[in-house]
Length: 433
Image 1 (cartoon, rainbow, N blue to C red):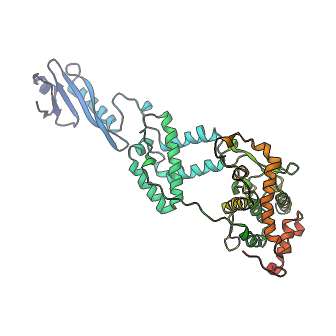
Image 2 (cartoon, helix red, strand yellow; image 1 turned 90 degrees about the horizontal axis):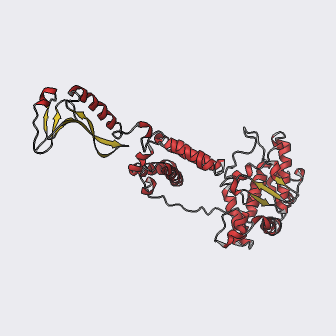
Image 3 (cartoon, rainbow, N blue to C red; image 1 turned 180 degrees about the vertical axis):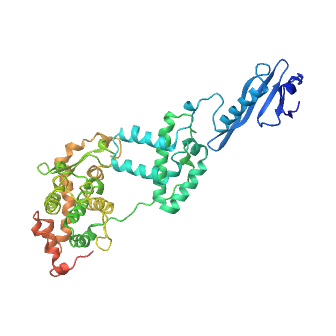
């Protein structure tokens, strides 16, 4: 029997006769309110489309009560409440407090930050990188249900395209990797979230490893640029990155108590990856001289901050914050020097495994995991570090720039100020840059 429609009242419902099959009589005033007529009873019902996070899931029906036990007016009032709840995305009979899928992106991010990243000792730099992605690049989604992204992956695809256009392909890919990690973590405790991570729908931007490192033939020209810099403390900072292959962020945070000149080590307590990745950098003789010069320049330039930091500065934190230089002044800095270190190590004949250990990279292969790094530090790895440093120094010794050679071999700051001499000309020949 086809559904009927009329304005439902107690009188009109009383006149409805039972049929061989159930049939519905829909109210002509309130959409979704109807009475279901069966052989023995007449039941008030409410029906609405159940939507969650912008996607229609199914049609929901709610039994309100039987005619005779409640009036039509009472049933219509209950129908309005039920239809209102359905319109808000609440399942019939479900309380808002335990509503599944209601976790927001902000809540998921904060849980991932506190319960995962901090608990596992992730570095402050890594946490800050995630925070920038979540709170800047995804700020418009922070208070939206995370399930919305799971059910509408096209939103993630469109946003990846938007970030690529406005911020670049590398940042767009990085932001999506952060979102993927937060979503996967949230789903462990919110199993009603769609199982497929919405980030899987994007087409990743192609990334190319930057080949901007220097080889042995390039070092002489770069050292000439470095020696001409006005700030001697920044000069030593860049030189130590080249000598150590360290990440700039790690060297900025080296405290005086992290330096053990007697053992010829610098301790890095919180590198990329957090405390679990803490390691020691073995110091070659040129590196020790560089560290001593940095300490002395720091005491001259920033006496108070130098009590705590290897590379002090007049900043709120007390140490060097920004390491970027004008390219016309210094052509290579930051991770380009880390790449240069890797290139020089290969040129010096250092084995792949030793390079991984010196740069604190994850060791390749199963057998390498049985190597105890600390047992190699004081002898073997320091010898390899010395070979790399000697390759840098030798790039100048073959030329006739006595001021630069004297700088690299001295620990006295008064012997490293010859860059004030006009032109810094060599005696008879120029460096091949």
